[in-house]
Amino acid sequence: MRGARRRRCVGFQPNFLYFEPRAGARGGEPYIHAIDEKILKVEELESIRLKDYLQLDQAEAAKSMGISQPTFHRIITEAHRKIAEAFVEGKAIRIEGGNYVIAGAKINAPPRRMPPGWRGGKRGRVPLASFKS
Image 1: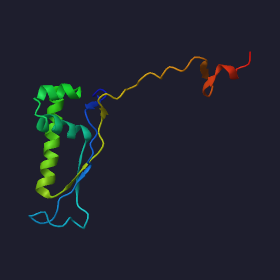
Image 2: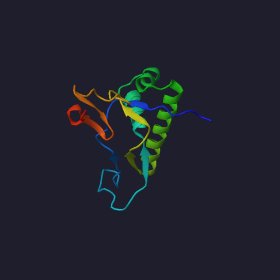
Image 3: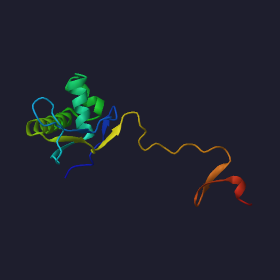
Image 4: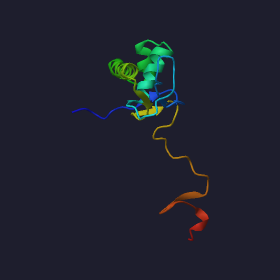
């Protein structure tokens, strides 16, 4: 039995979420009919960005994502397989989903401090002045 899956740290939010092949050898017209898609998870795209685009070594990339080197290897191998399949078989690539958190975002951050004179009530925060002694 496996433990809870750790969230992977991702250093950016992708701006482009869909890539579609064009018909013809020289970039002809886009496909008019529906084509098959491969879903690339956000953490798989991040592994490609770190290793192939930024050219980090595998240990640095894994550390950046907050995961072990073997886990990073599994993620990037799956990403390469999906991209290769999409290129060879003419499938679109959709980037979505996964188990990740944007680096720098607060995870399970404690609630912000309320201004002086506020305290919790049954229905959230209410000013002390509303309570009658």
